[in-house]
Image 1 (cartoon, one colour):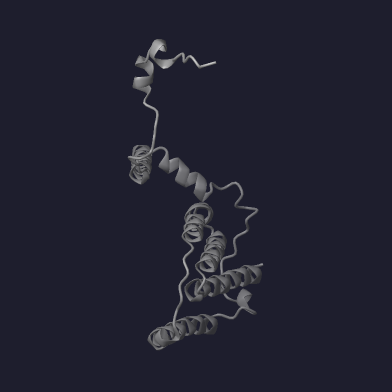
Image 2 (tube, rainbow, N blue to C red; image 1 turned 60 degrees about the vertical axis):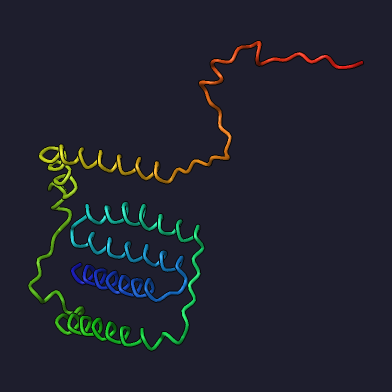
Length: 203
């Protein structure tokens, strides 16, 4: 069981690093956002394996469900096309080599200090989730504290976000002088005699 947990942790870590590499290396912005969603999902699974289920679901709901989807819609709507010339490759190449060397040293130190095949002989603490089912979860504890001790700050933050949302809507509304709109006050003061005209047509 411990080996399986370590295997899942290493798998999601590897997939997260690979997807993050594709985020910064792909030339298509839409593909980069899709790999960004995959990166968020991998690190949410890592948080779930570490026992922080609240932050795991928060990462999926907020970042994947809102921010990454917003990025995707904006990029698709703007239709951004970037062309990278090969003449600038010699400027980016040293940064790529330094970053690759840095990550290689991190992975090398991790795999040298651990043995995934014989991890059970190390004195690790194994948690039985069947015995932990009656214990209060992180989500329950955070909700109880947030809605009791910090309820005023939570409601104040929601009003601040509401004002920011209304301000963004007002700032993005543009009124054109050439556009025709109905004036309700003028329509209410009009009389039926001035509104309807009888015209005699020649026979």
